[in-house]
Length: 115
Image 1: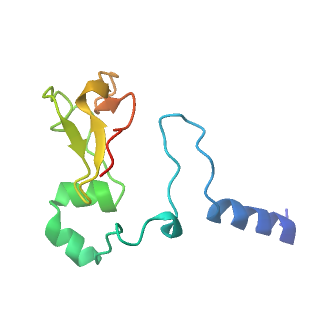
Image 2: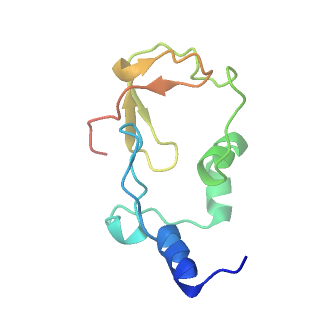
Image 3: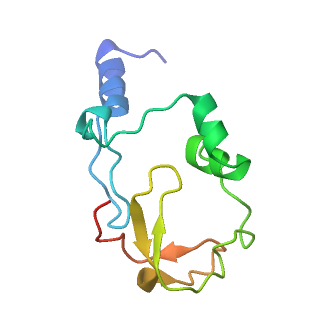
């Protein structure tokens, strides 16, 4: 089966456009143009590796994760705000944390604080 030019164009448009979120708990990814240049953090991969632990680098820069039920925050119950290890922005408040049974921390809503 061959692909027509229209199919290729549609596929390219889907890959480059930012879709609206279909899950109310998942924010759509921002394009580089949507990030305030004054708040954007740009570092080389070598700089990220120097700043983050190997596990943090894998999760933040390589889209990795730890095995279920093994992460340090799985059973963590202290009150407070969870922040991004790379940029420091607040992500989740502990009041929104719940046990989903998945083995990873789960939150019902993102933090309302602006970082």
